[in-house]
Length: 373
Image 1 (cartoon, helix red, strand yellow):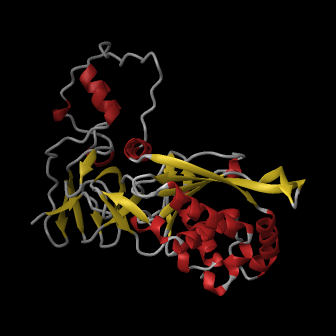
Image 2 (cartoon, one colour; image 1 turned 180 degrees about the vertical axis):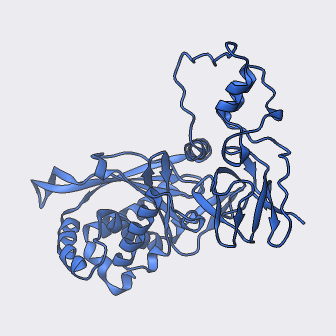
Image 3 (cartoon, helix red, strand yellow; image 1 turned 90 degrees about the vertical axis):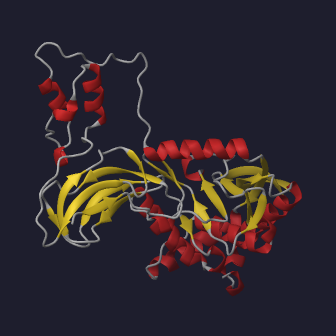
């Protein structure tokens, strides 16, 4: 009896996905644990491994097609069974080939594809069009670039957040003198011990975690007309990737040392940029940090990452003229801007959190105390 391969659910929030490529073609054998295909979800791309051994007999759904979870995408003969490739019930065809077929009125259901897994590709359609009669798709007056799945999902989530959550913003200037001094002091010791060097982002994350733990009223989110509390403090870190933005999560940041946070953050950023994040690396954060200081940005306001009610936007540290001990002085400072959901928080509660966050950054030695872990 043939087995079925379905669109998997790779995370609790995943409802649909897209097969980007097959690593096997119809007729190929595979074993348990061997990568079969790559799936794109709303958050990550992942290789999916075979859960049984067998031989691929049919690829049911085309590539690059958004499909609900549990949709049958392929069939296979189990090990020991006679494998007879079956004709595709839905012919696999690339998007470019489909558009060309529609433009030239080609019935591709009877064509034999020459692409991977028997997929019909552009050259198959061109071969089916009588010589000299092919009609190219008219060039658009404005160049259009298809959005990636990640970009599309990001656009939808940010639009939903900005339209549904009433944002308000609080900004504070932070004196970063002691923070930079401590960072310089720690660097050689961390290197000597083979540890990840603590970055400004790591100081920000730890200070956020402690401020949230100190003010638990901010550790909540809006859900279906109710305010729900988070358990523990995990923090998202906004990471720019080639086709959008990912927000992996540093787990239990309130209970982690500064060095542990640095190690988690570095590993997550590396995985994000390599496209290797797992569903367990995403979601479930109390709040998010977006640091654009490395891009020369002084100050900005960030959009909440739903369902979170807090996001902190950090700008670059630079020398500025400020009042210090009653006189003008040049000091390294940075602007941090809090975006908050007014359904969950009022101004005074958010301001208390921001004050605790800023004061910890200005006395960063507190982050090294045992009670800070």
